[in-house]
Image (cartoon, rainbow, N blue to C red; front, side):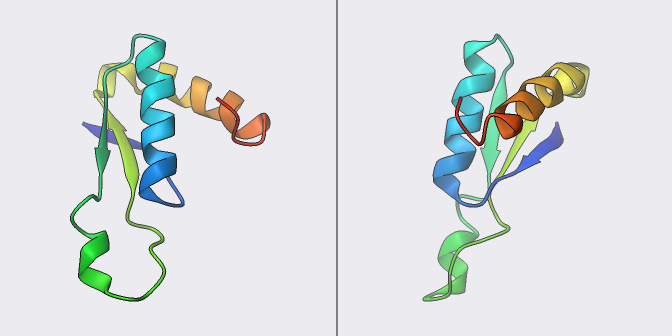
Length: 73
């Protein structure tokens, strides 16, 4: 699996994963267990979205469109 997106938080990572899966791209959210390890600090930089390497180019195209739209799936 290859990381295709660094999300601002775990919720955004799941939104992007859902968007990718709606377009037939299997995706996985990483970072679930890391955010609990930082205690009271703001959670940033831990959540990411991963896909199979063979689907990375398609995933990045969809993510680029998502970012151009201001984060609206």
